[in-house]
Image (tube, rainbow over all chains, first blue to last red; front, side):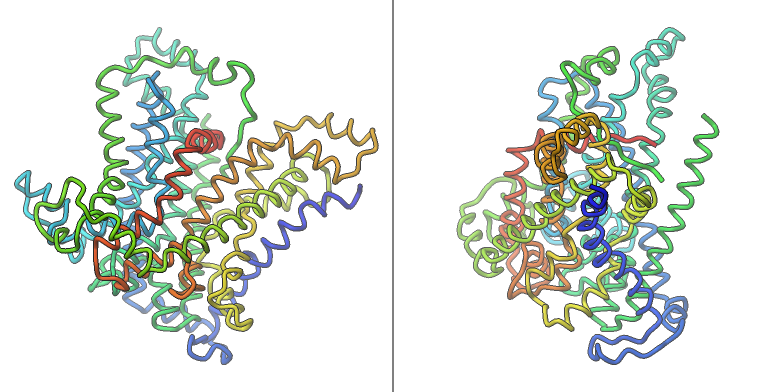
Length: 292
Length: 294
């Protein structure tokens, strides 16, 4: 019996270690080497060359900026909409399960399928979005080429796929809020909006923080949407690299250009960014605990 | 670090009834109107995919875009099936996602059980490691995986895609959170007093108690594995694709016909949409049970 706890966790840790943790370290090792796709057996020590190369590359900073911009314009509206949607789903509804399933269907649609559809919806000739804009008298937008247009288009795919999912997470948390908090707020004369602001939102704060972290992780590694939105030259993120994210830049450098050492360095930069995010999150959580 | 917590099954009326009852207000007409708008936005792109898939490439370039079905659906589905190799792709995706799901559920349950109910050295540290690594993006693994794959001559083979995804940190943590509450420690002790071996305990006590969470984890894992993108498009090519790899080839100009591309997107999504129709309630319940605690 003594040995069995280890027998139970062993399959998980062996597989997890071999295919997640070990590669993480190897990626760091390769980021210090010159590794070319065309000559995989010839790895030569490069020190910090790959990182210096990145820091002096306009494309890296451009990708970092795009990741940040797209991250913000996809996460903020998404979570706000999810909060509103959760609030509505929390009412007593006819067919409440059916509503929830419907809101979750975009989550079942793969990145690839969703992006192919949205690319067509956003097309210049005969695209649905421009047609609707025209209906309201707005000039057509070049969603593929313009800076903010393409970044908005890519973000909208993320928003579409994840709003319902986050709404369900908020809904679960809302249903765990004790009813007497609302009763006492109502006794104090708080109206619906004030109850939402002063009871619901503070009670949801840990959940909101959690979804912000998860969305940030997702935004940092954003890859499939911009790749497929770009069509044939997808890995460049548009003719002017206007929606090339870090994830896309890594794929482009590694498998299109063929510089796997540099790709490893980009991967580790993404990891460092996430560590910073995690540290900030930890700090915020601590402060939250203290203030409560 | 923030943690998720899965609540054990509700007993008769349960938590939600008690805690939500005083709060749950009846929805007015405005609520239904706004919800309908949300529902339309959620469903319209999918419906429109089917509409576009039933038209011709020529028609899709014209203004206004088609708002109702045309007569080319089956022709386009057939073309997508043949040109993008979606037949092979579907079979491959079923094999890949199926294997990953069985393995993830099995090993997560075992590890989750050990973390929840057994005492052993370093268990706290190992659990912390598991939680901490949930945030590592797939980009951190693909370069070494690619080099190993090339060394072994494994490119373009399905097990290359399956192996790295056989377990997830999320799965183990998910099962641990569930079993902490859903599996009474006395039950294990009673079985042990009766002289049951560890394997018997797992089979007759742990699995029955874990079944609801195993089902939910299975559904979530299948959706995740079916939609996995980055590593499959690096490891596989159009000769032996998963559905996502085939869709990627469609989108990057392998087939220039937009109506056929939409037919491919429709076909690639269909299995999951069917699963949603059948198990939607369970999937929704599963995501909501992953209720959050700071």
